[in-house]
Image 1 (cartoon, helix red, strand yellow):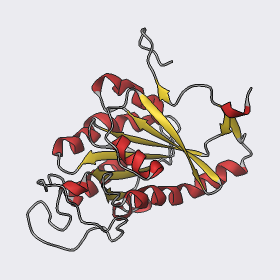
Image 2 (cartoon, rainbow, N blue to C red):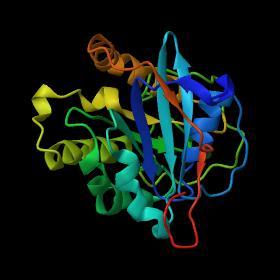
Image 3 (cartoon, helix red, strand yellow):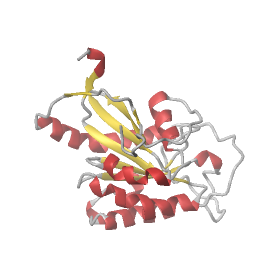
Image 4 (tube, one colour):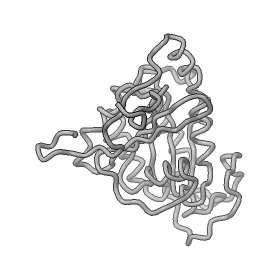
Length: 242
């Protein structure tokens, strides 16, 4: 096999789940390519290999469309972390996480880490909650200090809503909330367009996954794998993955 078709085997797997149009692909492009670009809906799924220091992390971008929903559990198999993504201006996108996507994580690792991420924060005033009262910024880490220039929209999902969902996710997984990572660390609001909190999201997850990476490497698993298929997962006429 040619060297060009060989790459490092991922140390861990991260999966991004969420309804269509919440900006999953844009988040990934912002982090991996350092820029924002309009994207079309992902077909099936695609993965990107991110080198983080000496480690290799595969980040899976999944389709939010209903017709590809059944593939989600396959993509989640063996995941060490799942990013449940919604649109802060769309309440329905938050409810879809619980009703459609949470069950797909049954195939993830037993010690899988969950992050609840509200994207498109640039469309709202970050200092105004859903009741219109001004308060302190809920997330102190700001990776893009430039204020949004996009016309503001009504924020339908508050940080408290995301925190509540995080608690229900832990309950669904049968985990003791007191023994898990606190919601304050695992609930983010981001903007793929401006870059707000995107680095903080991924770097926080990678830091938390480091113990799993070191454990996996200490077990002496193979460090390389052959990848001959393209990044984009395509479907055959028979409806199977090719």
